Length: 286
Image 1 (cartoon, rainbow, N blue to C red):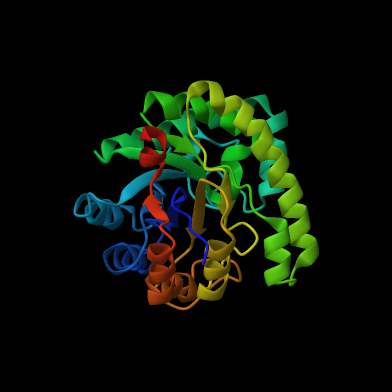
Image 2: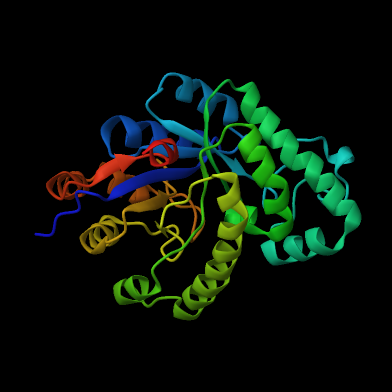
């Protein structure tokens, strides 16, 4: 059995604050499982409950899950009319939203205010900011990242997620949606490389490898065990979308991700192989 004495892994739950079901899953996964970190949606439907839970769990690292697509803004809709539709929400399509943010001067102006407002809302919780990532990885959009990076530093974040997944492992495990997986791997790999050059000088850390992109909504125990078995990097993040209730979207929050985080087999493999549980803050300090 191979030893991973120098490997450190962050096990993160996205969409904290999105619903009471997600909040309950995050609580259980940290209390009874191997979850080390979570990403808070400050505009989520259950954000107040999430913040209250986080205050009672100081060992749980909390980052900002920036929402600029498929969600509601922190600012009043009338203050960001070029970002939201008639329903007061961001567009659901990330490609359409990304093109709009890139080419519209008015949208970029409002986007700057919105990104800052989400950082300020996180600061108002009194929680320590661990890291920053984004809903549907929109934090990697060149315009968004340019706004986000200096704010992340100013608010004391330790790192930023760069979803550098392992295509070979992903396809060996499951060839469903193969075309989509290859496209996502290529697009987000390129965005991650570009983003790495922009966050590096700001001393924001990013794990060498991030698993979750190719199995989003399906981070079941068998996949997690395979990742742990093949882990070679000194640092990695596995991100999940745990929930207590049934899966409502094909790639959304689900009870399978929660069961993986609670799995005795996953915990045993981590312990047997000397893999250290980490957060973005501990990665930066070591």
